[in-house]
Image (cartoon, rainbow, N blue to C red; front, side, top):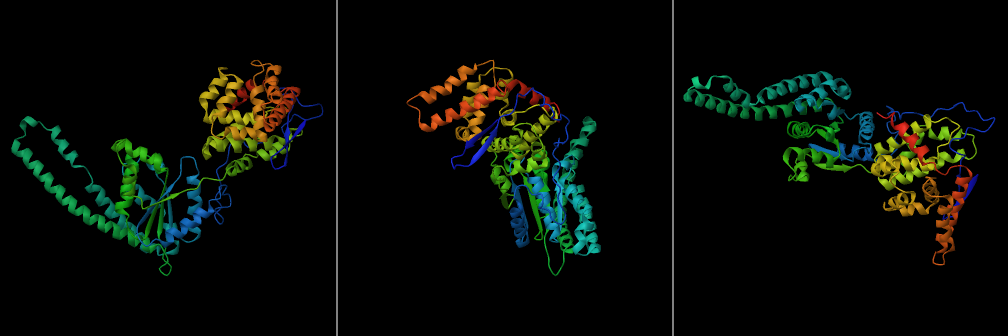
Length: 502
């Protein structure tokens, strides 16, 4: 059966009610799975000659703006690409990296989190330059670049040697028999260490200056002298690093690489990075002021438009192909219902891109673990999946049968924007599924009477009466198709799917 619902603008939307969830296919309908939904989302492919071809979030504009920004930089610059965890920073930075290379801008991409096992950030930064030197030199003089790289390494090694803590030398005194060490000898040791420290300080200042000169010469050697472009050093996943390592990366990038022809681009969730820094310096730290010492500019990566990413995910997981090939009565509209409900709920609950992908993964696994001739009631299934991901406590109450369907509905309504959602066509259908999902909690008559009273009440507005009437129509069709009491069946599907999750 297909129910036609009208939007406020008069557009007709088909809402299909599917057969009982545990019934096999009708005679003559093959139960063999002829099409396959993708089980796991594939990594986004970045096409070398068209890096934004698979850009699902319309971020090409950001990449082009940032490119113009780095080309116009006439001084040492550090810019932070700021976006919350799970909002696609890394994918964007990898696309932009290729865009920069296509425009003959020497670029290094460094995932700091993958290297935070290292004891020294300077070693990592020099190492990344060394590993990329051949590619970096495509538009410059590779022999000169390697010459300056060698000079940079030599000075870097000298700096590392001078950074060995003096405490290590003092600690050796602990291995001596202090009863046999005279006070005069200890005083002499302290004096010699103090002199050594002063010499190290003076030499370190000279070495840092020499290092900057060498790194600047290196940056100049890898670009076309007739059309000079800065070296762009992208440091990603900084917010996921150990706090000490993240701080050291910031310090080394700012103090050792602060030359006019190098631009550092940091990919991080600044709020998370700030929390890491507070773990070292204490909660009273002015994080914004501290980070401003290292970052000259912030670029806030814009969030994607509503529904944009989930449409891309449906394409990646091949949901559209899967639903379009189903032949059972009314099932052809399940894809439309799933996409619409996820789009609404993702915005309502503020899911990150990673959380949206997690939800689509659960839907994919639910499909893959269900015989093709069984039903999934996707509109309601998508609602339950989002609850599991974003409202786990409420979801657990559902599993434990600690909440009635009307309590579930009222709890959902407390979410800002939920009431508006329930007023549209898919929201109206969702309410009908919610109130009928537990067949043992409330009888059909009890549920129907609740909405019939709204229709019969003289205090109800015409819109309230029309909505109650639509819900009753949907409830009758759910009952006719055997869909009342679907909660336990769908929860089991989600829990089975969850067991496959890493």
